[in-house]
Length: 286
Ligand SMILES: [Zn+2]
Image: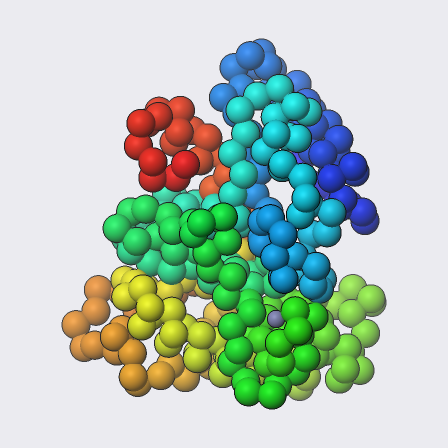
């Protein structure tokens, strides 16, 4: 896989960069470009103009007012599927990860912020605009930390990578010197342990809500967060008793770590193209 980090992720910069990466990947594969079935583009929501489209570091700005699919199709000259990163990650987890035996599960996706992908009865739940599962902005603490969205106490301000970096910075940890969340955890840094403790509390409440809303076989945590950090969060969860998931006969634990890796959303995006090609009449992952 190839990755490129962009300082400026506006469409003017990102679309040409993606076009170049794809050309390089095709060349490296030694295959003819006409064999390219399409491109799955995954990105954080929200899609379209909404109150959340202009708020905070977890939002990609400049994408609200353009037809993303059309712009990419023009640049790449192939069919394009656009999907929310959390939904794509859930698809990836269903195809080749922890959820390969499950038809109904929820996937809490750690990007910069926090997303939720829901697979119910084998179908991904997209919502009207592809924005279903914007879990980062549910409130888990009344009158809590201010969030750029305008709420106070959003889950994402506590239990996301962005939230962790803000917490650690406030505690005086300098992340510029090469420390990562995983290395701080391995060193048992007190601020990191404190963050885990707090984030796990907020996640516990959110997981309880998700369980009662969707009755999933399990809730999976995954995405761009190191496995050791996810394991530490899971260990500290204090899940609500008042949940439909709190039942003695369970096939899977209430919460599990994902196993399709950090690029899970990208894998999901690619899988959607293949899925659409081989089963064009089924609307499962359209
Ligand atoms: Zn918010």
